[in-house]
Image (cartoon, rainbow, N blue to C red; front, side, top):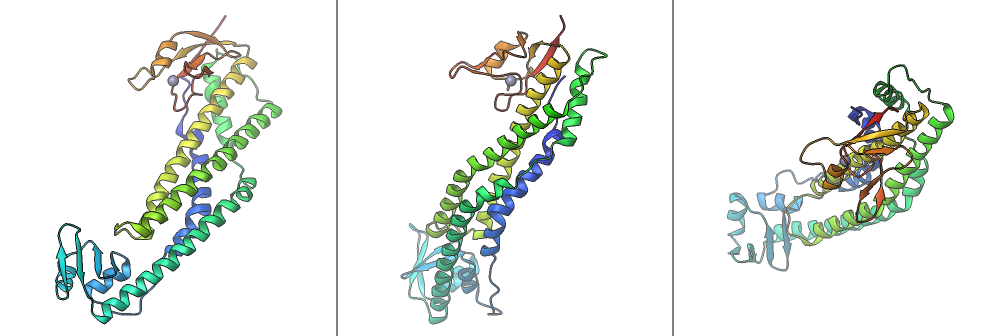
Length: 302
Ligand SMILES: [Zn+2]
């Protein structure tokens, strides 16, 4: 069965992850790195303020409070259950820490916003340098496809075809990175907004790391999707250069198969004429070309 293997796209996945990390996240994490405080043993409340876990503004403390912090707050403030805040006039050392933390936060947000501006400006330069080496997967795919072709048929992969496929693949991935950038920028700006306004006691580093998870997943999605598309094109090219022009559509036979592909099960199509895979848009595609499609072609011999 002709299926996309993880080994086809694992290099691309690594590469995309590195690009996303280096371009968007490494500089942010560097900025968000907590500064070492010289106050050796601050009180639990001051320590929480320094870490940004407790916030203070005009007589109101918000955040999450453990027993030690609550005990300290209760000395000068009263708890308001409804708003989950403590209200009161803090002693000088607590106030000083709160004002300093607030100032640090403002400076940090400003730096982060500047960096987000800079990264979206520099992404075009980054994209120019991208090159996804497909050589090893290309050979592996070629062998795997040959195995599904009739015995004795071994189409040779000529240089020009290989070059063209590789170029198309690279252009598509570059476009994918470019297209992801506005969404990435928006996500990061929203993150800064949440950091500024919400009462979340996550550190900025935690928030950046959870955005990184989203981007890492996106990298894997793009690697898999584009490689699957590539593999389908490559299979059609290999089969047709071996004189095999038709295939039978085969689904992965499980409940995740979308209805439109289920209907294609067993139908026969030409490598030059992919069937409609999306009735709504009329989009056509061979097996594996639709988003997340795990269908495959079974070659039909005349
Ligand atoms: Zn499918």
